[in-house]
Length: 92
Image (cartoon, rainbow, N blue to C red; front, side, top):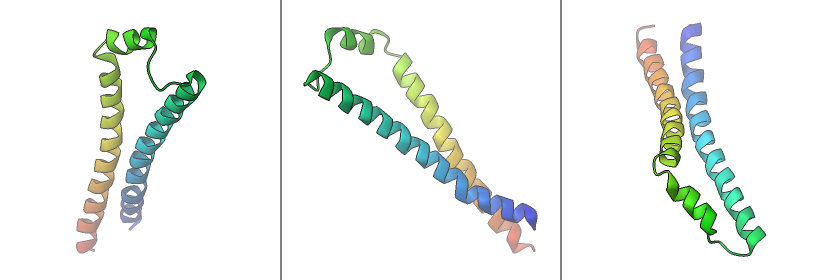
C-alpha cells in the first residue's frame, strides 16, 4: 500500500516540478532580456552580442534541448508512475 501512495505522490509532484522548471527558466530569460533592454533603452542586440549568439550555432540550442529533455522526462515519469499506481490498485 505504501508503494501505491508513493507512486501517486510521484505522479503529482514530478509533473509540477517539470512544468515549474520550464516556467522558471522562461521567466528568468524574460527578466534578463527586459533588464538588458531597459538598461540600454533598446531591445536590440549589440554587435558583440549578435556575434556571440550566432558564433556557435550548436551550443545554445543544445543547452536548451538538454534542459527540455530533463523537464519532459520528469513529466513523463510522473505520468508513468500514476499509470502504474492506477493499474496496481486494480489488483488490490
